Length: 426
Image (cartoon, rainbow, N blue to C red; front, side):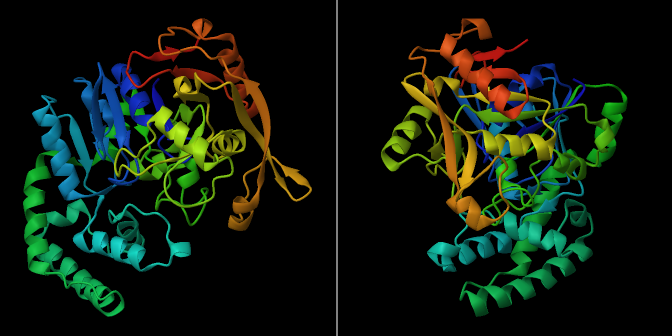
């Protein structure tokens, strides 16, 4: 490899879980660098589906060490359940899962603030949060009041910090939202128990990861969500609270940029997004429903229906630029097998102007008109294809056109959810 970053190049849900799982067969270390338990990574092995939220999907290979980096915000309950779930499946986690002592924790007041704020917002102010406390946890991180895993080591320090935070949060929750009052003693006791549970997994993961890189081990760095949900370069404010782009890997893991060799962008053969926010190529409702059923487009974490649209080359070119993508993995090509015609968005119209970049202005993102070119479908199954040459001719033309438009080569094509339904392109 030896050090590769895997980035979602659309609005998330591109199939990163499957690709990371596939690549992990040849990898020594997989490290997650941002996000929280709102990211569901789905892996299908011989028809059996496994959904992971915080632990990298590389954990399903017995030889791979998995890291949850300092840039991730961790929900103790979700992490405990996920570890126990893997152990019940016969997956050995001990000695193979490492958690950064600098990672921040999602607290009960974060979840409560997240859900009450969203519920109290008017329809036009909602951002489509999952209500899992991720945004408020990142707010506290940058407000320098967050609780880190390392804080659990000192009970007196932890008690003072939690008590101070809850005193402040209770005022907000009660006086602004009329919500329940939180009990600091119960929260402290819960997190002390969590400390005992995860003690064996906690270490300085930056040191471990840099040592692995210096030893020339194969290392994969994975992000959650996608480029268009990046807090700086996405469709702000309808974004996540961290940086899924490749640069996030450096700050989220404590790895210098000079140590990264490749950046793989994951894109669907069409486009989807969950929640609110601009979506230029979104289908009309009837066709949207059809594609949702064809692609089983429902969130792995929340079950929310995903909005569907045509492949947007403007979006992917944006991802190529801000993450420095060196290759692409195309997923869900098989979902397009039954379509007679397939559109690709090549640019946007803004009034009389045609633009080829994704605008920063929210009001333009909402009003741009996609410029489409139409391609003939292949009307043939692709799920059994074993090589690029065995794909239908029109499918190959479609993929080549995507390469031309975004100026990055395709290295992987996924033609189904199972591990085996994957083509590695020479």
